[in-house]
Length: 183
Image 1 (cartoon, one colour):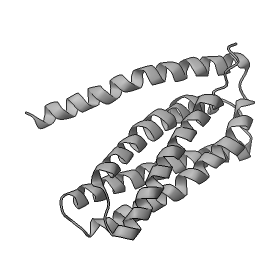
Image 2 (cartoon, rainbow, N blue to C red; image 1 turned 90 degrees about the vertical axis):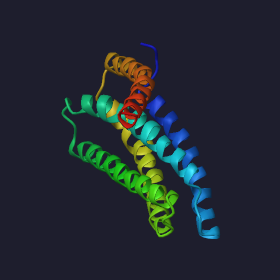
Image 3 (cartoon, rainbow, N blue to C red; image 1 turned 90 degrees about the horizontal axis):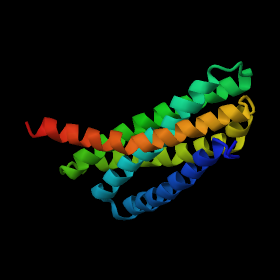
């Protein structure tokens, strides 16, 4: 066994997500002070949330860790915590879609979309720190007790393969989108 725990990379990804949240906090405060938003920054932030936080990070959790946990006889508390985390992921996706839509309207000149941008950013800033704390402090350690060292090593290999495939998935999607638009 390599000695690596599946919680390690997930917690490392949380630290990177927290850094983006710090950027969003500054933009949120600026929106309140100046009554405007930087649509390019929101585009970058939503791409980060969709690609890194959701597809990469939540993807590893849902497609690998949670899928494997679902095969275990979990105690009711841990099963409930997993369901709650999945609900958080779904809520984050809804908030991000709302933010993308409002930012598009704002960038096109609809100043009334600023309120929805502020609301969506605020909701994401409220959701993610609590969600991260739940996983880091109360979920990862007890859930990993359900796995043998060998199973954890297999998960780490799956995580590595997932990460390798992700960039190809992202940029293939971009090319396919551009092909549809340019027809």
